[in-house]
Structures are given as C-alpha cells and as structure tokens.
Length: 364
View (cartoon, rainbow, N blue to C red):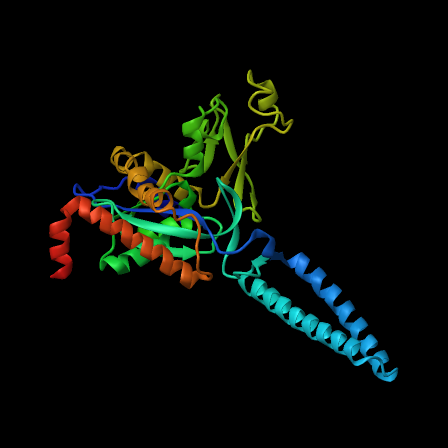
C-alpha cells in the first residue's frame, strides 16, 4: 500500500451519520446445550482411548481364539465376542469424532452433542452454544437470531449483519456491537458495503476503566508522513525492524544513550536498549475505527446498545427462564431460540401497538 493511500485512509475516519438513524445492534450470549461437560472429549484423551481399545481388542481376539481351541463354555465365549463387538463400535465412534475434530480444526468435541462446544461465560465453563442476536435500533425488535458453536464473537459480525440484511430486505446504515466484535477484518467487510460500524477496541474499553499512564503507548505520537513516533520528551523513535511472525514493526530511538540519560529513565522503560514501541501492520485501521467510535454522534448511538441489544437476552433468559436448550444439535437449538425470539417480538409489538391493532394486523 502506498503512503498516499495510507494517509488518506487514516484521515478519513469521520462518518456523517444520517439524522434518522436506525442502527442494527448485534450481541451474543452463551446458552447451555443439552450435554454434560464430562462428555467432552479432547483429542489427547481420544488418542489415549484408541490406544487402550486397540490393546483390549488384541487381548479379546487372543482369548476368543484360545477359547475356541479349548472348546470353552459357550456362555464365556459369547460374552467375550459381545465385548469385542462393543469395543470395535466404540473405536469406530471415537475415530469419527477425531475426524470431525480434524475437519473443524478443533481440539475438543462433545460426545452427546458434537455440534456444541465447551465455552466460558460469567456462570463458568459449560457445554454451550453461542447465540447471536441482531436487534432493530428503532423499535427494539429482534431482526435475526443465529446459533453458532464459536467460543467467542470475534469472527461473527459481518455474517450476522449480512443475515440480518437478508431478513430485512435491505442493508442497515449503521452496525453497533461491543468490543468482543472488534475484529478489523470483519469491520472492513462491512465498511466496504457502505455500512458504518461503531465498535470500540479492547484498549478503548480498558482505557475507560483505568487512566492512561504518562508513558503508555498512547502518549507516543505517530507521524504517518515520516513513519516515526515521538515520545513525551520529544525524542524521535524510528523504524528498526519488522516482526513478520506477529506482523508488527518496531520503533526505537537510534542513539541508545538517550534513554538512560532521560529524566524518566527507569519509569518509561527498564530496558538497557531504550524504549521500544510496536505498531501492527493493520494498526492504522484500528486507529480509524477507534476515532470513529469517539465521534460524539457515534457515542450517542453506542449508549443505546445495552438497552437495545441486551434487553432481549434478559427477557428470554430471565423472564422466560430460557437458560438451556432441550434439543440437541444446532438445527434444534436454532428452532428453540427463534421460537423464544418470536415470543419476545410479540410481547414487544403488543407494547408498541396494543393488542387489538396487533390482532388485526396478524389476522389481516
């Protein structure tokens, strides 16, 4: 990417939000699957079980052969053949689970519900599904709900907005989500469609909870024209090397004698080499979305996120007592949660329209 393009992207961070905003709010929650945690099988445990089963199958084959030669009691031979059959079936089942883990690139699978996953939430770690909800910012109605087995929301936003646009018949102008969705790749996909995204980065949320120190990276000014940083003491940090593994660039003061002589030596850095700043290759995009989130109009929209995005989950999980799925598999879970979403929407429409008008609209 040329420097001119880089500069243009960094500077075009402000978005003219439409006056009649009708944003789409996206949020996710974990709901327990109909499967016990102890039924979760790791790849390491699966390999161990396969080794143990293979050893036992070899033993049974030898015992069956000895029993045939010795004309042992029929009952004993039948029992050994039954155990052999069970072990072979178990081995086949575990091999299928291993193949599924390899295909999905996962390290665990639940034997009761292979489509669920072990997920962390405020209630602890449980076998669950990650339920994604997309709510209309004007009326607070659920536009679309989806069930996934992704353990977090990192790669979910673009797909959720696209599915919601399909349900609405048009694309939303604004997409709003919390920092769990702050995946720059996902945000760029929506930006390319002309959808303005309002999503804070993780460091912005962390910064809201604690003040930034005098020597944090945020206190070092980056100059895109010269590709350098300037420290609080007005010293220039230049590019020194690129870390291809982590996809980031390192910046440092060329003269290593400067930092030890600084009045803040020992506070800014403990390194004898001097202070070093790292900048990720896509950091200009992170800065772009961080600046957009700080826009006063964006802040006003984002403040509505909790009451719009989290209210449906509160109603479904608390008022409707929907804290776990009854049906196994994503298709069954999807049917359950969408039924609950329909119930929420009906209650919401009664509030908005009144029962007589809603009945008239539904009966046509």
